[in-house]
Amino acid sequence: MTDNGRRSELAAALIEVNGRIARACEAAGRAAGEVTLVAVTKTYPASDVVLLAGLGVTDVGENRDQEAAPKAAEARAAGAAPRWHFIGQLQRNKARSVVRYADVVESVDSVRLAEALARAAQGRPDPLEILIQVSIDGDPARGGVTGDDLWRVSDSVASADSLRLGGVMAVAPVDWAPDRAFELLRGLSERLVKSHPSATAISAGMSGDLEAAVRHGATHVRIGTSLLGMRNLLR
Image 1: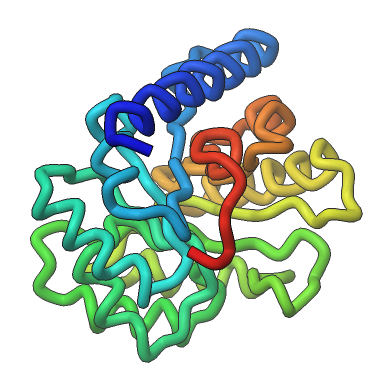
Image 2: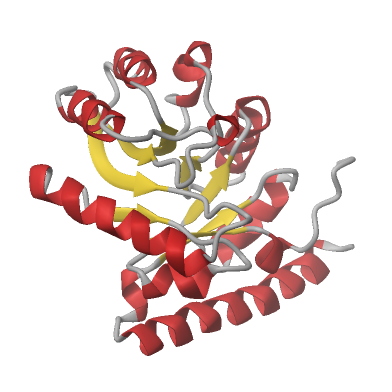
């Protein structure tokens, strides 16, 4: 496909996704500007990031450092400078690499990871924004904090000069109704904000459940398939 063809394809999908967000916000009595679209570009080339940036997309998400680091560099060389969100499970030994390109890490779920990121982020011109990943159902395979760990991790992040506590993130478990999952997340967010008033971000919702996420206060929705198409895992 030519660049013009791909641009047209992405532009049409972006209109549809933005329309869904706007309709969800209207139904929830919220302004569309309250919700940020994070385009999840994993497995897609840097050229798609450049095209999306040209179409007005400000935030992109990646979940593997070995793919994200070179992609961010290639996009930057082509003149695209979106905010990069790291959204996958992160090993502490990747912290130094991730802080070189990421503006937000959405998947912090331990004090040790928070401390590793704080050390790696020393010397950045701006603090690295951190979202605490919450486990909705307690399944350790998907990552995320449970119970009182939310407060321990959030306090660790908030105490680090090189980090900024932004809020919370979660993925709705496949066997949960999205409304139930996101209602729980919103309740945890409201409790967190009482201790950390600026930590108002709620990253929740993907292509299949963004409406439920918006209904329960999501400030960021992470959209891949509905925007970029079905992924070819052999890419």
